[in-house]
Image (cartoon, rainbow, N blue to C red; front, side):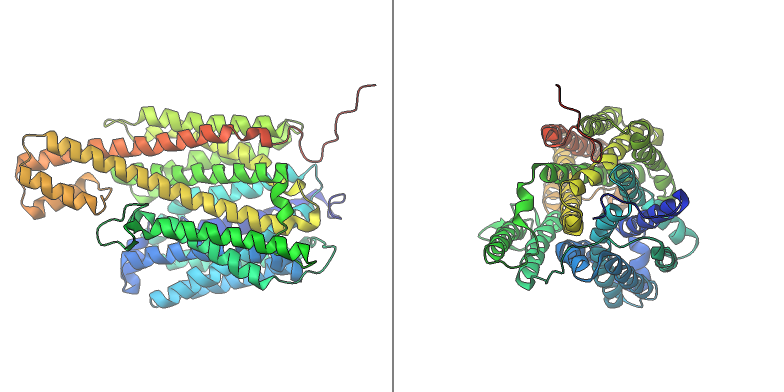
Amino acid sequence: MASSTEVPGSAAKSGVVLLTFASGQFLMALDSSVMNVSIASVAEDLGTTVTGIQGAITAYTLVMAMCMIPGGKVGVLIGRKRAFMIGCAVYGCGSLTTALAPDLTVLLLGWSLLEGIGAALILPAIVALVAGNFTPERRPAAYGLVAAAGAVAIAVGPLVGGLATTYFSWRWVFAGEVVLVLVILFFARRFADAPTESRARIDLVGAVLSALGLGAFVYGVLRSSTWGWFAPKPDAPSWLGISLTAWLMLAGLLLVRVFLHWEARLVRHGGDPLLQPGLLANRQLTGGLTMFFFQYFVQMGVFFVVPLYLSVALGLSALATGARLLPLSLSLLAAAALIPRLAPRASPRRVVAWGLVALLAGAVVLLFALDEDAGAEVVTVPLLLIGLGVGALASQLGAITVSAVPDEEAAEVGGVQNAVTNLGSSLGTALAGAILIAALTSSFLTAVEANPAVPDQVAEQAVVQLESGAPFLSDAQLESALEEAGTSPEVTRAAMDANTTARLDGLRAALAVLGVTTVLALFFTPRIPTRRPGTPAPAAAP
């Protein structure tokens, strides 16, 4: 198996192989954040609405979630290297289609469908290929850099999208992705395939069940801001008085349970399951997957909250917002690359625990630093701490999950791992947004109702408007809306003050929830091994 040997060749060749994998991970993650600052421009160019473009972004995440576990199994069927290269080709076709898209339909075909399918083939294959191309001693560093590349892509995505949209066109982002895909395919011939001991068959029933289960759950989460979590928002779909979000999440969980029952039945009858049920009884594997979930939950929550503060509360441009996120990228890369190199025998459990502490410290520092008079520099130290925390987790978790199983099961684990990170990302973003809006609404209404300058009729109208979904408005946006409504200067001033306070209250509430989640993650660190994968066990005492 590939666990005992490394790809022959020089260190430079190994560096090229690692850079190829990191570039693939970077490319997959970039699309989840690069267009968030350019939604309005894309909508105008394609003659559609902002809601339509947001739907395309949602559909991209949804397709990835639905296809991730089957995508890992495809790598076993056709070979991980071939799955990686086919995935790159599909992804490149999707990027080219998106770059040339004349309308929303073609954008959905290229961005949401083709790129989503390509990502579902590439990401599980990368997990297996790293295991097949690096020795156990070098895997933590390799996995750390690959994971760091994905996190950095999310952080610099707004900067890349802002630059392209401001000076060129959003289409150049996807054209650049095509070029990067071609470069990756050129260098892909340098790495070795990850060997498999047997040829598998695809479990079609399991593939459908897993896709429907994960798809229903993730779609419900992604629609929570529009429909409401449990109590439906005005005009939102519901059943028995409960939001469809809750029903979809419940249906998704039930389908996943049916999927696991089907897989266990296949194993009992000697079939070839899509996912070995025994994997979920592996303490080290489930510990690593749990930490992956918490990492992406908190990470994506931070990437949702901090850009909102910079771009809306402080009024920074897309470029300036992206530049302010760079400290996180730098400290993340440094931690992911240097921890395995400088502390090769450090306990993974201890590194993960200190990474969570750094995440918690960053959230707490930012929570207390937010103030009406604070400037953009207030995020620098918290982002450095959060980057160190994410980098520390990234330096350990990939090797922990893959080393928990034989190398031939690495792609299968890769599919589950990426499905878990997708769930964490979706839930982290949705919950941070829901908490932020709920706290903002409550704070704004309390301030308006307590202010004698605001007439009762205006306060009642505000209650009705906010119950249908409170927007996170900048001062300029709110002032413009109030001018159009013809409100008096006293009411305008009261509303502006209430909005400033409510924004900060919402941001603090979201950060507090992320901090509590990080504390919760600390209780699961005992499931992380104390010995780094690939290091010999200590000799027994005589």
